[in-house]
Length: 366
Image (cartoon, rainbow, N blue to C red):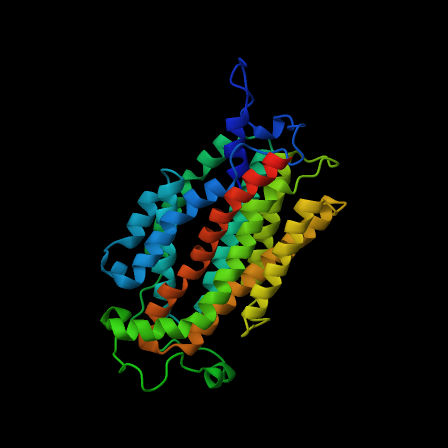
């Protein structure tokens, strides 16, 4: 959806008095009167439609979403109809599967992160490839409708159903490094899932998670402000790529960086995720300055920066959840995972709300 955001909005700019309008916005002429070749609406609008329902689902999750039966079925049913229902599916799916990691060996966090990174890359790469091959954006999106059925099949046919277990299988160093997020004076241990936790216990665990939640919110705020607020404004006329193609390449390179770093946990582990938040905010400031001052001479420099942006975002995600898995007690882990997954969605939502007025301001000036 986000890779297609510029194409979706480009159709609104197509002339209505022509007898034939090509369905592929890559063939739409540039708007020569605007430095940024602006659409009438920012791609942040698609982002908000894609993320706000997810945010609502994730905010409700720690309070009792575990009582909803057949969440995997709801995910698959909501996925095909459109952006908003697909967003509900995404929220349900992420909360469900991240909570389930509490019942598997801790190494599953790395596999989950790598899988989500691969999903992003596959989506962006397939969209880029199919549109480059000549398929219209509309038909490219329709070609993805078989994916929910594959999700349902993988859930019931591939995923095993273990009982509650000590999620071990890590090196001794990891075990030694584990430090509880709440102290021993906190709530009494209870066996089983986090559905048995009292409100006081949940609040205590939540306060301990803030050390990880706040940096991840900042990372995702900065990177999605770049992705859906600045990508469409980082427009180069001195290249063979059209505006829509440039946007698709930006999205694909970002996802490539995310996939690489989300798959890197065995090679590189980062405890101080606040450093990644700082670097991502520097990225945002640099690209925002370029949008305003237009000092980068080549689109290939932007390509490198976007790849680096994805590396930072993916590293922040996988290391945050890995650290939480290490530092929470077994009986709190399911709740902690479901709560921490609010972080990225909250940051993305804030970025979308601020990117909309930025787009209107800059496009009005140009």
